[in-house]
Image 1 (tube, rainbow, N blue to C red):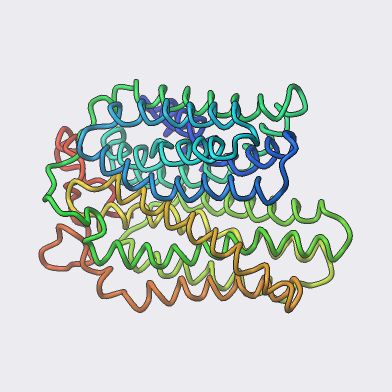
Image 2 (cartoon, helix red, strand yellow; image 1 turned 180 degrees about the horizontal axis):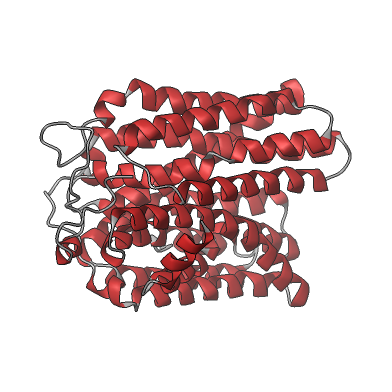
Length: 423
């Protein structure tokens, strides 16, 4: 397994694109924490800090698919670089405004979120033109999902380190400077400069006119709800035991499980259409979340359950990337991937909002019950829509078999290569 990933990372452009994207997405992973720490250091209350962090998150959710559509229309560098600059300037504006005037602070947060470059969607659109062979593309998707877990674990640590060495203001600015640098590394690469989306049919709905894509997004909305609720429920579990570090144990175990699962998934050469496999992976995810609702008093046991619950997360994400490529209408692949980011963010926000009152009513076990219920709902959505998912865009016969992606003109440079259609 390790040799397969090393071989992938040695392929031309792969390490640069992966690292550049991860560094470029640091603001996504740390903006909420960075804003809260900065506003508190400026003397603002938690209400203002939370409102600004929420403003950033909502603007980010709106901006990702809109910018993704522009990438499909105009190419990557023309969108990624200007948007990264605007996003960084938004954070500079927030840092300059502080808590007074508040309107200027909100303007900065909104600009930073709205202009955040859609690096996730851009990277996933690039893999088929960078890697030859469906198996390598599948492995790249799995590595991408695993790296995402690493980023969301390491990002807050970077913020904490910069705060300890300098200040909260420095953390806000340094993280966004790194984000700008990462976007530059990706946009200046050969694959990004050469990539062009396929000619698309003009339609105001864009990628959302695909019923299969809507079905997948509906399912992963509830995965986002599960992840949002589990983060709050973990804190409640720790508070009930008088040790706030317990929350970090649970969330770290969840990420570790996802990392192990993603690496294992990418090491297998999967055969057949990905849609049925996605249902099985979401079933595993739902089953993994169910025992958390028991909230056993033993912290080691609960940590083990959290690790097991994370095993199917990265594989489900990696498989969903292939399904999105199949289901996205021609010429909308970056937008389609960006919609997944948006649905995750909105789902996580809803999960965090819903689980608070539930915990106050029924303690931490009820909070984890929200996580379990969301996992089951995700499975139910993709199961109820299996007929829609079985007819990918560009497949005239509605076959479950592999179909050739038309979302990437560059795939034509490698005859006989189909972009990520056979897992």
